Image 1 (tube, rainbow, N blue to C red):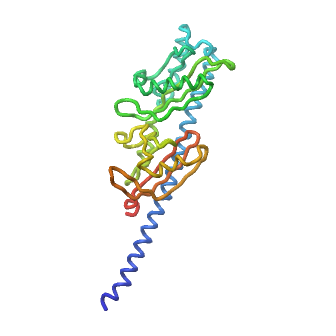
Image 2 (image 1 turned 90 degrees about the horizontal axis):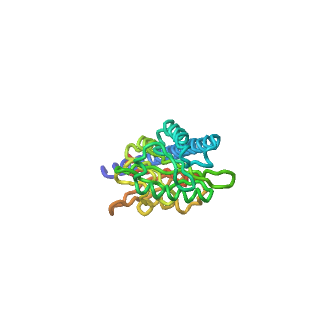
Image 3 (image 1 turned 45 degrees about the horizontal axis):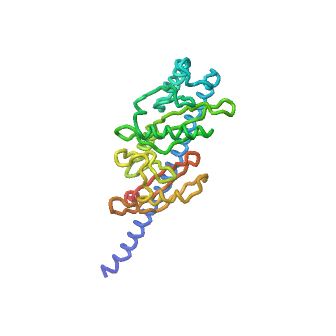
Length: 275
């Protein structure tokens, strides 16, 4: 009789526990949606502000009549002063350079940044792209001994329809890294990837290096590759994270940034979400 009387209590307890866990899981999904969307908007504003500053700098060079002969030695002082002003007004710009058709020019900021071979090669790709009268936005880059996240943005310098050079900036993503650290709490990981599944910025900088492909270990990241590039989307789904041969049930959410071809990812283990 005692066992019979305890059975309904046990069933009721299990039911209440299940409902409680489901509610906690739903709360985690809502929080992830809010976090990824808000960060996606903040990152978009961050990039837009930097782009406007770079285009503004190009306009100043044009108004000063410098674009036509940006690499002329006699213009070095004036060009350098304008570039230094841009760097001084934005600590996120590590280095900025204006070069002519001969790839000779002037720069401002921390020149040591350009000693990095990956950045040098990315800058070469930037020049080739701007030669085609197109703007350039690099893949995620790691620079320095501690693999800090960065990217390169470049604009063509034109006189009419004639290409006369390039204005390019190496931009730190440390500010975005700060936002990701603020949101990565209580077992939740929040990071940024590009649509190819490569890390753009991750709070665990020693473990996840910018440019590292994580699409094979995080199924949610793999799904990004199946989306149309111009589509803005937010999706939350149960996923299984594979790490070092171990599998873990997760709740994950992504929000895309079509303009940058990036996405913000938030994920947390199901066990952590239910406790």
